Amino acid sequence: MAYQHPQLVRTLVLGEPPVMSLLENNLIAIFLDGVIRKEGFFYQLPYRARAVLMDNVKSLGGELASVSQRFTIEDAQKVTMPTLLVK
Image 1 (cartoon, rainbow, N blue to C red):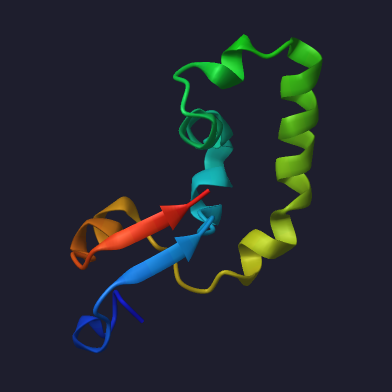
Image 2 (image 1 turned 30 degrees about the horizontal axis):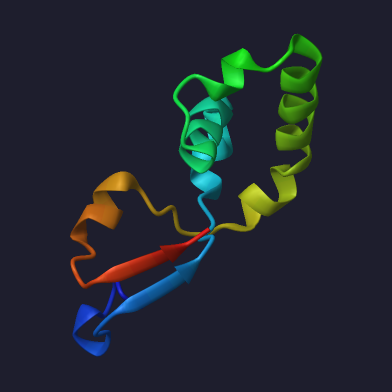
């Protein structure tokens, strides 16, 4: 709504907004670094923990496929109203 009809939105509060597109193409490392707020977090995990995370990402295939419209970083930059992200 905020992206497609910004004139209808004054402010946003997003509770852990989904960023499924970041999980595609093995970008899970970037996603986790952002969520944990620690650069390189994914690669600091033991190998087995990384493998489990990658297996879990594969199980999201159906959910990823159900996202009909991708929301990119460029799209997010176009949302200019005040936004509170709740973690």
